[in-house]
Image (cartoon, rainbow, N blue to C red):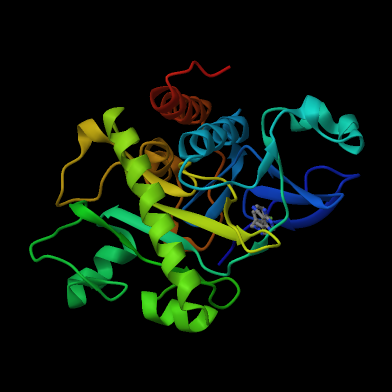
Amino acid sequence: MNRRYSEPVITGLNHLASGKIRDLYAVGDDLLLVASDKISAFDYVLESEIPDKGRILTQLSMWWFKQLADLVPNHVISADVDQFPAELQPYKEELRGRSMLCRKLAMVPVECVARGYLTGSGLAEYEKTRTANGVQLPPGLVDGSRLDRPIFTPAMKGEVGTHDENVSFDVMAERIADPELAAHLKDLTLAVYSRAREIAEERGIILADTKFEFGRLRGGTLVLADEVLTPDSSRFWPADEWKPGRTQSSFDKQYVRDWLTSPASGWDLASDTPPPLLPPEVVAATRARYVEAYERLTGVKFD
Ligand code: PZK
């Protein structure tokens, strides 16, 4: 695979780790999570960036954290650069709107996934055994079917460079060797996802599934971490185009996928060569979709 990883963007800060499109820095005893404008498609991080994507996703996460605060505490200290510690002030224009200062947690090594619609790896398992992560499901479901009761489908780290491995609740509980924690993760994941699915549905966006990361404070309190309920951590589908029985349109990335797989791009997904630069109109249309998701969900104009 020919993945490209982002370089740590802010020289001068104590870089700790990078995901595909986000970077993590140490700031005193706390952490700074910085979202870039990078976008991934077909497992590649593209050369083209989507202007404002990091700010949009950070502001969306912050909005969700607020909607969910009565269900679960979160790791955010502040996303207001003017409130950041003195050592960050030299970087404040680079950080503004796209960074969150967070409490450092002892992370739970489980990707806590909730699914309220069946697709992807959940669908693949269902078609073989009528289960998802070992959970029995009703007969007759197809790609994109809504699940009346959302399911908890945890995943755990596999080998480097591979996708996470879906595991049953029991296997996850065994591996973390803490059945009470396992039960708490499941309950929190389903409670938070169910609240979010309902809010999104009212606003014409289907939140098909999502991935949460939790950590613990000293003392043991479970805290919701990372970014939450963004198009990068979740599948967003336009509700007005939802039609079970086929691959659903992606709310945010459909223009990118359509163009990359069209003859116009000159690119072959099977070729193992990195995807080409996106044309400006594809970048603009994609940016508009991120803005639209933000504005529909929050009811607030993005600026
Ligand atoms: C933490 N990640 C994943 C995200 C990356 C890596 N509050 C926290 N405390 C301790 N650790 C983490 C968090 C959070 N969130 C998250 N790895 C560690 C990650 C973004 C960029 F490089």
